View 1 (spheres, rainbow, N blue to C red):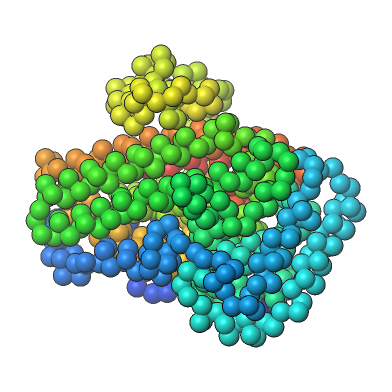
View 2 (cartoon, rainbow, N blue to C red; view 1 turned 90 degrees about the vertical axis):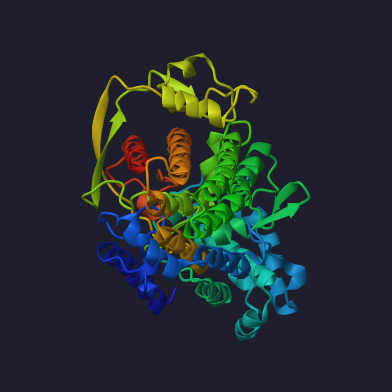
Length: 536
């Protein structure tokens, strides 16, 4: 990678930290601020009477406009995005598709747990990178760059998926990801891949030097009727069905949650319009429809993240690991970049910092396994669910009625207090917009600046306020279930690599030299529990 790009990446990271100290949503540098989790300023809310005229003047139609712009520019007219691939590209781009389809059998080890020597690993990584570079050597990079501005919206999205896939292949050199590659903090990428990929990231306003949830997942899924397929797959050729499923469902869960959540986004935008018109009951009715979509999206999440679809022993190695990055201070893909979750944090004004006193915070975590749990999945209530406090039990049965299939023993969340707890002090991983395209950042920012929760809080009996409280309960319940799921899936020793959590990315989540998997898992759980506490 060029010195200028590396410098730019480090500067970007520094700007991200500086922006946390002085929030400013009016400048380009503000994109480094998380729009996912908090109020723009940590200050008391204005009264609704003071706020409403400002909102009415400045933001009328803002949410609808921001949403439509995101769908048009980053979705190709639909959401989730609707990319097109090779057949819609000029001939000079076809080689990228050819190589992306040929690469997997070379890069993916036939063994689930590869046992190469260090010398064999170094040779394997170097040989694969050399093959990729030579395969694309005949490409006229200047012609490619001249072609990109003329691509149609949908074709450009598909080509983004292809180049993101290729650059991650080059970055790792072999799959599953191994410790030798994790240790690399900078990589000199071939210009044939680097130039078009950097152009595309710049075009969409993505600051990261690597792929993101948008480029690695949302634009890499192809709908076929009621089925979904991956445009570029590492594992399609593998003989183990569990490996194929882990990769597919890992991508599909984000895609499907976005598809379901579009109704919620439209309801949030419409809620703003109705509130500004003084139509509180209509706004509340609209949010009820959005809430239905929200519960459906969360139900889909828990229906997917279970052993029958994504097996723990192959998820990190054969699905999630490839999406990491760890180059030039950028971490890589994380579920933290989910548009749905960031939209909810912005809509419900959930604080940016999980607790005061960054960069360190504390949380209580159990010393031993939880003694009492209640299932959180697409499952019926079972006997121990009745032990939950009234609100939680009611929410559980509300989101997952008794008509659902039986639960797996793995789908659990804490319901009652633990006997032994200890306090964990952890270094907080700040949210960043570096990994989100511009349209998503603008939409989330518009939702947060609209401050609909404050606008609706004119009285305790406000139907909009009541509906938002119900949505907040649903969101908090999801975060409880997500914490349990994350701890289960991340708590896995893989001998070929250093311990790494998806939520922290390669840089933020890799265990230190003096830190084992157990210590890393404690910090992960502490961070997630702190977010639960902040969701109120």
